[in-house]
Length: 599
Ligand SMILES: [Zn+2]
Image (tube, rainbow, N blue to C red; front, side):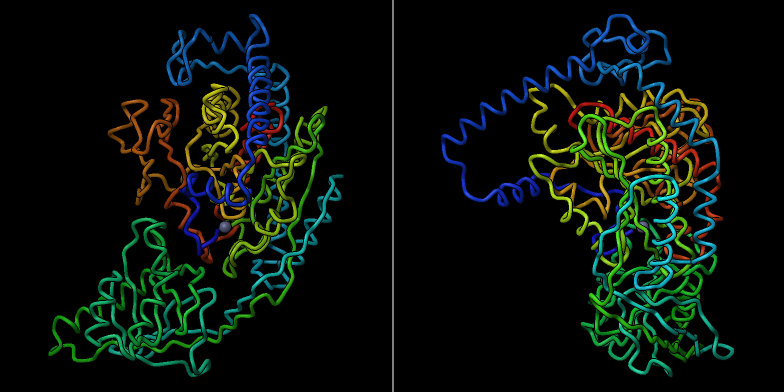
């Protein structure tokens, strides 16, 4: 996942800002006659859309769907209430009968074999990690393209110019006061400069801080000059703490520091140092494991508190030989396409990023994310007939190095009057037990909501309840059905900004009870009370189900046990989790591709 723009677990949408950008892009003001014509067109379009909505949702009398979803004027939130039979929730939305049969086929197909797991294991076992600029990335792309062709699917690639950073040799030693040169666990940060002498490194005293304010204070007092700043901020959340990794070098160089070390951004480490990008600064920047950051902090504290007994200012030697080559190579996005049977110019783009960091093998970030999208498309292709809309599984390249793959894709497939994206669905938060999706409605449906009375967030919530709410075959009851606000992602961001409806596949946190920093976290005391209200508005609820055991919450800090570390391997998840996730990805994709509504 991308670092420069913040973490995408809880992406924010700036719809006001986006709307301004859009009207600015539209150019000159519309003349009055054009405005009238546009208004008339809009009224006509809305009437057609409303007719379609009414026809799609209320087409039948007393079929099975309607029994499950009584619809006696309950309004937009009716599905959140308990139905007459206790367990069932009510909805004003019903779904065409054939959709259930298709969903059942998608699940059966996804659970039938461990092909996704097997393929991902084979690729990562063979080629290893896929950092941008590596032969391994391009060989992995070739390998996928061949396999997709073997699936009988249509596949193309598109070229993307990428920035390349190589860490090369690097080391960090704790020199004094201790027993001799103690080797520490270090990983240079992406786009970091090398040390001035890449071989012998630089030796310097360290200063330990936990905030930018401390950097500024100590900097003003001249304490940082010629020293290495160690940021040792205990983990609260990725969003709040990643700034030390991305900005810490810039802050410290202002005050004459010669390098920075950053405590790994994560809740837990078993000496598993966490890398990622840093803003390009003049001084080198590297991360150290949590344990090593704590070690250096203890020694520093002793010296600061009792300089008589501990007279030596702690000293380290950092050597880095990293090299950056901007726009120096060409990588590729992979696009697998299944043409829609009725409206092929309406496109659903699903996928993840094919590149990874250079530690571990990128199974979690984001091999599995790409591969479940690939499998979702493969399963959709096996239905008796393809969905109404076109579905593309996209393997975006170079997400970790600034996301040019996502931008190139959006530029190569622009939104036009005839061809457009109606839904973009990314998976880049790991693949563990499926939990649900984060979703943001598209601009069209938001703008038309007053007139159409159609709310696409409510529609997706009802769809999740309908197609996933009672499933017992996807690891736990109702797996994957929950719809949370704030869909988006680094690779689909260029589409979301243009008003396309966006979602992010959201697994359950693999370590749900420790280090809970998520706003969705449910304390065990709250589990007794169902449907407690969330903090951020009307849709932000805990859709808790008594049958869920153990308690689940959407992925948050548990993902960072693996993220950008050597622990990012096939050992992070099970074949069943991958199967279930592929099934859930396929179902949400199918809902978007088959329903004739404006998401
Ligand atoms: Zn990622």
